Image (cartoon, rainbow, N blue to C red; front, side, top):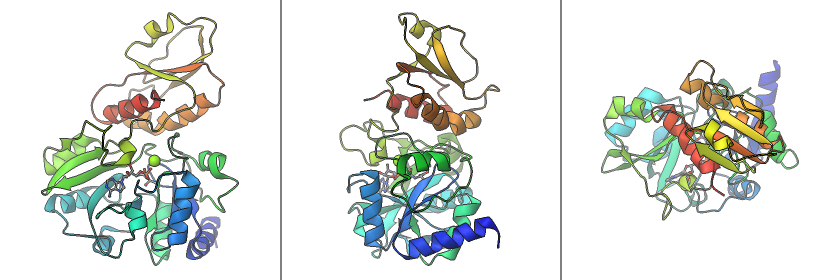
Length: 319
Ligand code: TXA
Ligand code: MG
């Protein structure tokens, strides 16, 4: 038996015993448990220090399994599932009665997706139940895109992290909900809104996220490094007032030359937004370990995945 199938067998055994484990997906690593095990779901919330009102995403093995989870599926939701699953798109739909309140935060809707990573798909195919999995980071901190990031956060308390390599997408899934059958964006993510609109037409945006966020992942303080972070259109100019400080920089394509910079992360030298997105969290994790006085991030082009990157950088600046 190969090592990976050994690991999957071990993962199945742990999950069958109501334990939770770290799992790879194409977006970010997750903390996964059996959706029907109250013990497992409670440990996810406890381990993440996440408030119970903030619901989890249910991961299923294929679109065919959707009817077990959700009902009254709008036509546009079915079109999106067909176009993008397996992939980085989460749909918020009316839940089936059997889906526990603990998973949905007491809501009558459920967030669901089919992840696109060979390891978690192989795992889901061996299980008799779907997996609830939030990103594998303590509430509010940077999401993990490698098994090492997960171990750094949870080594002491997690019995296992399935290693699937660095996440190919590197930012969470895009979340779409529905109102009268029409799509609404709940969270920007790894699937560009333009790609979604190409399939179902205009997607309504929610902008006032601070009063009563529909998806608590849109709470403004989220995805934050511990180091104070600034977002600017002009890194060079932002650096001017600083002196004698250790500064880290995140830029899209072009390196900034300035002696004040002690660590610089160029996310895509070729100017590829998908590549930049895949590198963003790993870069923030590295910068956060450099003992810097602050991080200065460059604003990205405001379209496609650039919008998603700007959203995460903006949240990274909030304390
Ligand atoms: O890429 C991803 O989506 C990753 C991987 C592991 O799949 N998961 C992830 O989960 O980002 P988490 O828990 O960090 O974010 C889930 C988001 C939260 O913002 C939550 O509020 C929202 O989904 N959500 C879950 N159920 C919801 C519902 N019924 N209505 C509205 N928002 C919901
Ligand atoms: Mg998260």
